[in-house]
Length: 381
Image (tube, rainbow, N blue to C red; front, top):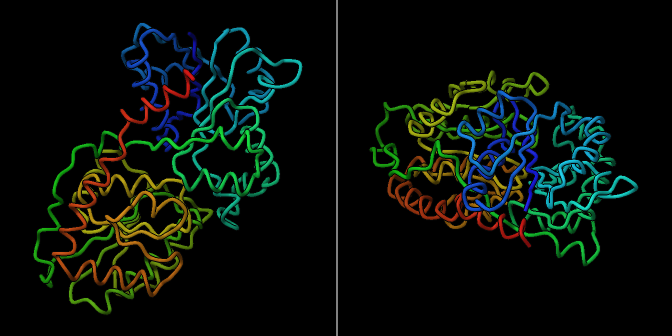
């Protein structure tokens, strides 16, 4: 059997889909030694970084066309047909459509992962993004991907329900959609009892650190976190620091604007940081706060739980599904509820310790070995 794994979604800078692709291909090639994998990569350097030691059953193929480009749509059908694979696996929704329909259709079947459909759920989720400007085309592409794929994998039951509700596929196509929970990156794979939790939270001199990990897109709702932390400080006797860990985006300055007006707390924007630096932030923080309006999964929540860091998150999208009973879940965009959650979480060490224990247990449900095994079943089905 021959499977094309489209790893062109692994870019120079790490991304969620890049991590997903890297973790899966390394495990799939191990648990399917009898399968010949053809891994498509955009450059030799990225391919060598993704697979530093090339297993015998993997062949790398460099394809310069970006997966989002018109050239990819035009030339990929020819490439797929030439490679004579049984399955083409795409780790993101945008597939080379002409390879699976029309006069250039090949015998290769398509299996696709759709991580979320946030642009169809959250109004003005990221108003300056290309997807937001071409929303009708995006919706059409999601529907066409569901129609042309043999199987659709999603990260959560929430995303599955959203696709069915928003795209309205036929009953036959809806049955193709299956939930496969993703795992935790190796950077936070080792569970530990978070040190800050067992410290005396009544110590009025120690700075309490609230951590956010992610982008600054409007739907992430980072300004609300900063505002809630500022309000919480008025009720608490110790200093509070908010750390925003993620790439800067000059298109969305709202978080910095709110931080400049929040006089009771200190806010630090780290910009893009390494895995090692992020690990240290997880270890040094007291609480992870994830204020997003909507998520298709919410990887930072699982990363924090895995290391024993207490988590406050909203009820947006899949977050309650991922958090289970381990996190403090508040209504989205509710300043009063988020402020109250921060105050109470930082005020009661016993509650923090319990959240830490439950978080470690809940995060164990999400692992890459299980994800790879379940993905394997759909690839071979």
